[in-house]
Image (cartoon, rainbow, N blue to C red):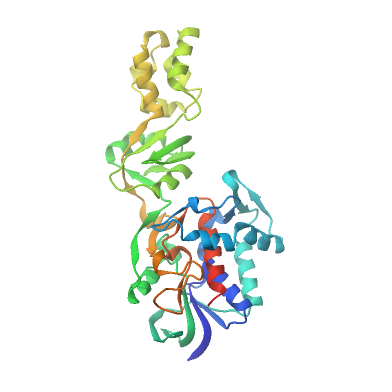
Length: 393
């Protein structure tokens, strides 16, 4: 039997960050994880380059049943605080579009930084450990039974993440722990995930696999502008991943494949200036030929501009500006970057991340009902929520 002040379950981005902060306060800290390696999702994130935060972070970049909950943590440990840590370790990094920050070399740089900070804070990390039971004996006294040993601690931190990417060891452990202590868990679903299509659309678009197009994608009132990518299963790319977190099954999405031009006006002007040009010739200046051929009837795209009416131009423009498609579903947790839903924010303190009803029990990171956009926001939530908990555990 081992006595520690703080037991953190999950050697994740949030788990390691919380361990560092608690260790700095001279708390004895042990991190447990069922995996054989710490920070697996850190290593595979951002194509192995780890999109560790974003220059522009606000509550508007997050989805939650309580949209105000994340404000406190994000304001107390900001992106600038984490960037300062990265700079202290002289980790080379660069900015990509939309303020996203990536490592120049490898995500290993971020993980090694966190592990070094854990060492400096005297944090003990125990891997390949399966937890069989968590029991609250009294306020700030828990007993945790594992397949290797038993722990007694004052604070338990759940940093086990969601259900996304099961090959990285994702499990429902965090949600089940919340339910064990009668803490509400919002239904969980895959977020930041590619769409699959109904067979008719999938077959029609199959030849477009690998083509990317700058687009505006909309569902309901939410819109994103970035690339969409046609795949052999359906639709992916940054704009699709972003909108997937707002989509509900059965809804249509609307895609503007030509966001920078007014195609109807362009066709009318070209008809006056070059009436003999074929519709296909004009469109191919702006879109891949394969896409044009699949989206438009052969007879129309091979006709000249002068043979088309303005009404026909309107129909052509709508085909590309307002392409409406109903996804069959998503690819699910297998390829999802995050999980939507999770532990109810109203059950937690936004200042400490502690359960309001179960003293000494904390939830941080993805297991909480806070889901960020694509672009480093989920890592920033991990750092911020973990830092806050680390000041109090």
